[in-house]
Length: 456
Ligand SMILES: Cc1cc2nc3c(=O)[nH]c(=O)nc-3n(C[C@H](O)[C@H](O)[C@H](O)COP(=O)(O)OP(=O)(O)OC[C@H]3O[C@@H](n4cnc5c(N)ncnc54)[C@H](O)[C@@H]3O)c2cc1C
Image 1 (cartoon, rainbow, N blue to C red):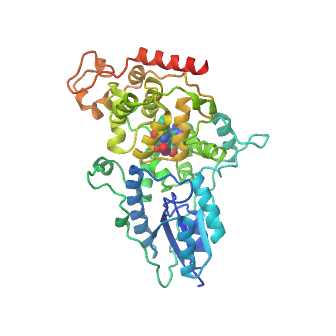
Image 2 (tube, rainbow, N blue to C red):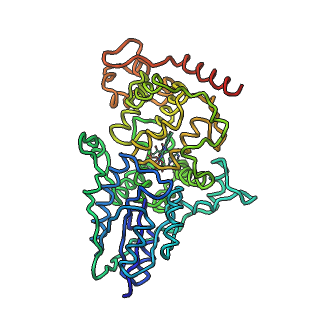
């Protein structure tokens, strides 16, 4: 059968619609699937704690699914190029198959692996290949709407590839590290109880979520902004770990009618984020509008204390606190509430968006470099898009408008007894619940004054 070929798995932890795995199987050689825990490639961003929890379970499930097909997952840690070159050499082979990834560290790693071995890269984690959606002048888009219009010219995506029926195994398996030794799960304290109750990482869990969502995709637009309902797909972490491909989702729901198109447009935002980080690899930490470097963000002990109150869901704004507690408890937050919480941190508290971006990076199970940065820079008005800093969300009226009463009751139990008329903005002090850190009018005025000063 010849020397084994490697399948280098990263955030594409699935067997269905996995072009790299299909190509490796088609080579006729024995296949060795390998996951490298790489915290060392240049510019690498270490995965946050919530993502590491998800990763542990996703790898465990993937190994189980591979074993059902006569294969298994080999685990190694270290710098991808060094680890993969050594493994290929040990197996007497040179061929490595993998899906493309676009974070700057993965592009660095792909270049390095390509020098050390014969690396074959395939598309499959986005609706269309990132970098392929260009303006008439051949340049990348800066704004989402024309990007999405142009992307749709390339749809539908190819039909998903079926998972291989069997995966040819080598005669002797190379040694694998033990997942339990990687310490991806929290121990003392174990903060992941809420995660376990909410999520089922892995490809089977992703397909189950898709099934549930498909029956209500047509009503997406009516329900997506209401945090008290399960109106969105909750597929984000499955997508972030590549446990399901966007093509699989597209082919399952595109014909569902109603407002399914609005949902597919959100998948388009995911592609758009890759389009942005391809143009600006440092987008996660560098303002796209460079003049923002001089923005008068609050700093020092008082700002630090305010950041902590925001992180802990103790701002005195029920909708913000409900969102931040949902995040801490379950590793996920409803999109409308993410927008409100981000705007609150940046505008009401005048804290640099990068500090919020880092907190989300650490606490979201769906943390994604491009999507997180694009949304934070959009909220700050520092981004490549046209959104402005002076667009300040009003948390109290947003809470009322999107009927967040039940959502607040669930996540802020101190307020659960309040009637609808009081829950968005409690008129009297409530025992155990903090007063507002800053009034809405005052916060808004302070943000606008900072903006005026900045604009000089
Ligand atoms: C400040 C902020 C930070 C965010 N950080 C992340 C992040 O790190 N990772 C992440 O996946 N999403 C992020 N989002 C986008 C969005 O909130 C989540 O994708 C969404 O809430 C996930 O829930 P869902 O799967 O039910 O979404 P659905 O509404 O069902 O949407 C389907 C899919 O489309 C994509 N999507 C939806 N909204 C957006 C968006 N605004 N931008 C980019 N892609 C989108 C996601 O992959 C999502 O799973 C962020 C939004 C904000 C405002």
